[in-house]
Amino acid sequence: MGQIFTYIFLAIYTVTIIGILLVVITENRNPLKTLPWIILLTLAPVVGLVFYFFFGQNLSKQHIISRRTRKRITTELKERHTGESHIPDRYLPLARMLSTTAMATPLYGSRITPYTDGQSKMEALLGEVARARHHIHIQYYILAEDETTRVLCDALCAKVREGVKVRILYDDVGCAGVKNSFFESLRRQGIEVYSFLRVAFPLFTSKVNYRNHRKIVVIDGRVGFVGGMNIADRYVKGTDWGTWRDTHFKIEGNGALGLQASFLSDWSATTKMVVTGDEYFPAQPEFNTSILQLVASGPFGKWRSLLQAVSYAVMRAEKRVWVQTPYYMPSDLLNNAFQEAALAGVDVVFMLPCRSDSRFIDLASHSFLDDMLKAGVKIALYEPGFLHSKLLLIDDELTMIGSANMDFRSFEHNFEINGFVYDGAFNRRMSDIFLHDMNNCHLLTPSEWFARPKGQRIAESFLRIFSPLM
Image (tube, rainbow, N blue to C red):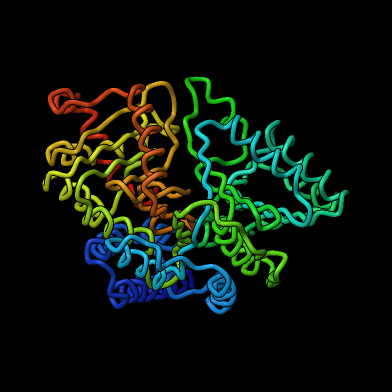
């Protein structure tokens, strides 16, 4: 009898593995992604089956965020505010591609204020919260249960008592260390709080790999915040081994409505409630002549809008491509785009942290630097602490800001939001910040880098294999 059950189990198991192999093959993925799964499932079927369940499934055809709801909210935004006619001619194809792949509306005349440290960002955020009259919408990957978060939540609870509607979305994995009682205490005080793509049983769901990495605040539809900073002490006070250098932005005017559209789409996906109306999309003043296109990207759907847009823009750069990112684990498409730009004589500068918050990610990121240096890319390592800023400067008019890192996870697995700013004055302002940060960097030389220990090279190469999962 025992042998019969063994044979039945082996038969079911074999059919399952063969079935998964057929699914992987018939999905017509990039062969470079398909072949490793075939090898792993064939040579180590038990391990391969577990890894495939968590990290390998192609969920692009699912619609976690309703396209109909997204289109309804975006159409309302587009009917009220659009600025495509003001985009420089050379960037019109890029803007139209983002409109097609991400339903991103070009918005005219936003005032954008950058913050390069957590203290100044929190002071600005608390100041705008105090001025709220109708609603406050907050979405973060991390809301830590610490002093910084408590100060913000106390301010939000005070606004609820004044009659202001407060809605909060947080990522269930990003806030995994926060007790449910913390969020329940906010609900008891009148704040609507929900987790995005809730992971009820982390050990039994493939969606644990798909997280919402956006950082959005919208207040009364008139002002918003977006960028790289979450709500936690370390963003304000730094780490025990150095400062936390990050970049965040306050957006006033029509750009705040782009953030509103993204938040309300995620709110609808999470709560199944559609929130819209004039009070959420009010008329805005025009502060300047800039164009801001906010791109809400995600792992579901056919297009990888941010990856495509960044690659497209980099390959058409004429003078310079300056990058700040805490992690560099790119796809071949993006990696080649940067190298080809450098080989064509474009000034390509990458600013990375000398040390990040993960030794494994450092090693995986560093495995890509050999070819970058050989192609002529300049590598600047930020030394005072952890560089967590996300910034892309192309030539003299285009700037990309937001939440996405230059890695597989941000471009292929996470829900992110990035702004494409078509404006020379803003580009110059962010260039000045980049050059100031260069004063705190060590410029890596090829001779120095290629002399690093062989053991380090082996570790880098080994961890590079797992870079799509980090």
